Structures are given as structure tokens and as C-alpha cells.
Amino acid sequence: MGRWEPNARGRLEQAALELYVERGYEQTPVAEIASRAGLTERTFFRHFADKREVLFAGSGRLAELCVDAVAAAPPTATPMDAVAAALDAAAGVFEERGDLVRTRQGVIDANAELRERELIKLASLSTALADALRERGADELTAGLTAETAVAVLKVAFGRWMDGGQERPLRPLLCECFDVLRTLSARGAVGAG
Image (cartoon, rainbow, N blue to C red; front, side, top):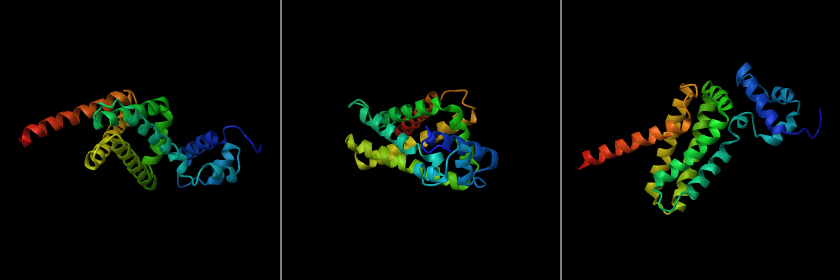
């Protein structure tokens, strides 16, 4: 086993995902992941805090991408338009990695601990989006509500994308969700008056 093998992180991610699918998440020890990748456990722990993080390591980069998209939205963009731009950027990443995303989601869906971890990561994304919206001048209520709505849109559209076998791209599914929200808002405004 070479000490400085190239792409150790990628090999560990691939080995972990393969083993999680083959044996199940709970039945896969870190030692087997490292062995499958041709690396040591020590190398595994240099890249990941635990075996869950193999599945969630990209969450920080995804949040950063979304925050950058909110910041880059035109100054005239509404908070909802800004988060729509953020989700569009995220959709590009998911669509690029289609089969990998589907496999990863299957592993998460099969394990309650991983589903809980995913909810925590989505809550972190919501917080990051709210912070980015406040940086753009949104008030506390608008920033929080818009960020939570964006995460709800992402969850629903992503679920539809997974259920549909990724036959339709994620971006139009996100747009459909935002369109439904606009329709609901318009109906609510009429009904409230």
C-alpha cells in the first residue's frame, strides 16, 4: 500500500458507497472501506471524521455554492429569486453526478441515522441561506421564511427527481415547485382580502 496514493478521498468515497450498497451501512466497518480503497484506516480518518461523513462531506461545499449564488443574484432580485438561483446552482451539481447521487440517496433512505443526519445538514443549509439573505438586506422574518421555503422546495423537487428515476432534469422540477408556491401565494393573497 503506497503512502501517498493519488485521489485517496475519492477512492474512499467510492469504496464506502459500494460497500454500503452491497452490505448495508451498519454492516460496513471503516477497516473494510479503507481496505477496499487500498488505503489504511488512518488515511480514512485523515479525510473523514466517521463513516457517515463519507456520504455528507460535500454538504459544506453545496452550502457554499448556494450562498455564493445568493450573493451573486442581481440587486433587484427578490429573496425568493435569490434562493431560486441558489437551488439552480445546486441542481447543476446534482445533475452532473446523477447516478452517484441516486446511489447515495438510496443508502441514506435505508438508514434512520443517516436520514436524521441529512435533516441536520438541510437545517444547516437553511441557516446558511438565511444568513446570505440577511447579508443582502432581508429582514429576519423574510430571510428565515425564505430559506426554510427553499429547503422545502429542494426536498420536494429532489424527491420527485429521485422517484422519477432522474428521467426529468432536476431544474424544471424546482421551477415547478416555485411556480406552485407563487400560485398558492396569489390565492392566499386573494383569500386574505
